[in-house]
Image (cartoon, rainbow, N blue to C red):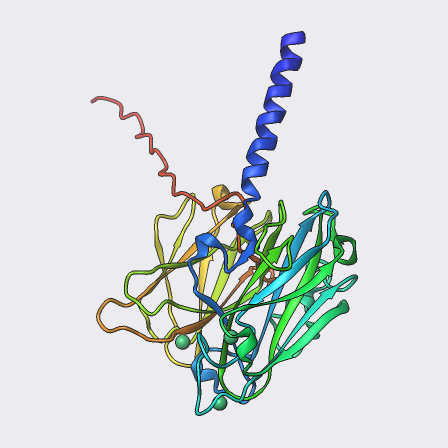
Length: 334
Ligand SMILES: [Ca+2]
Ligand SMILES: [Ca+2]
Ligand SMILES: [Ca+2]
């Protein structure tokens, strides 16, 4: 009996270890370490959708585990639009509004509008905690601006993830240039110090590809129970190479791709081993001619029409394809 209890104790310790490793600290950087995406991008609303942003705003969520009770910060790298990193059209005249929300109305699992992926709905649900407009400002060019401090309890509590949820919206309120930027969820206002167990996610991902042939970018949607098939939609991919899906079950299935200023959708069946894990959508560059400054938008929804979250640190880790061992049927000798 005593031995059984010891075994149970070891089992739980092991389980906690695995769970802990699933909540990697790389989730603090947005885009995340495994995603290999250079920048998020949001254009000024006088821009053209053919430059790769369909709606001129981007919504990101940050989750803070309930156990973490200290103050934290949300840092924005290169929040201005001008100087380095950004995509100029004519002259730099874009203003970007970054807003941080907490409280009721933020949690996208209880407020579908908050997800921000369907245009025309109110994606600003929650209490406004902080905001700032950035133009072309040398002070924040290729540098961080820090929002906060925030108290975890001012977020919107989500039971399933046992976490407080915060939301950051970037809107291109005027101008026509592309603002490129990144986020970091930090314990420190001056340095990037991860918040244990923190993560970030979005439902409509607008990002920049690398300007080289070899870099592969990834995004990791989480597949919850009840998902039978998914619909992936991608916008303005500029016919740049291949988009592949890899999972525990899929070795590299090709997804239909968009060209210029259009949405393309594709339907992908979900198999039982893929439930409760992340999928790996890989974005491979075309190898013949370099497609430069490629911005792309991606959403994924289930057969019910609800959007799946893309986590900066994939839930359960990066999925690894596990070949199914086929057992040949016993053939009766003649
Ligand atoms: Ca401009
Ligand atoms: Ca910028
Ligand atoms: Ca594009």
